Image (cartoon, rainbow, N blue to C red; front, top):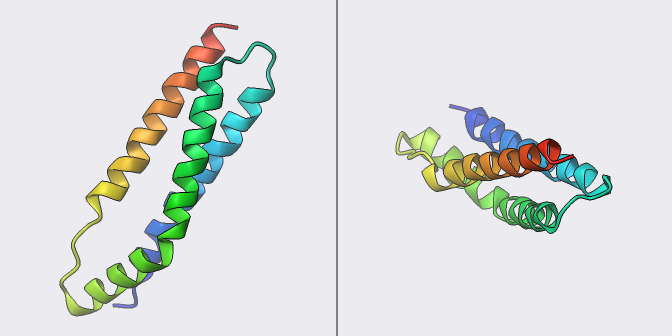
Length: 99
């Protein structure tokens, strides 16, 4: 195996978090956006930076695991991205509904 699956997963996670940060940053520009939006923007940015910092290590582990047949999925990383998406969606929906 070439390890492309690991690369696609890593790129998808970074793209998802980058888009979340961008959307929330746009929400901050709206008049009357609350401190909840600012907190979620900060948390999303921190999550994106953290995910980006460990990207190479996770890619190498996943690629090696796929080559040797001993790959185990990164459940914690996937769950973290999923929870971030749900929280951001909830906060964004709440802010939009309160306009």
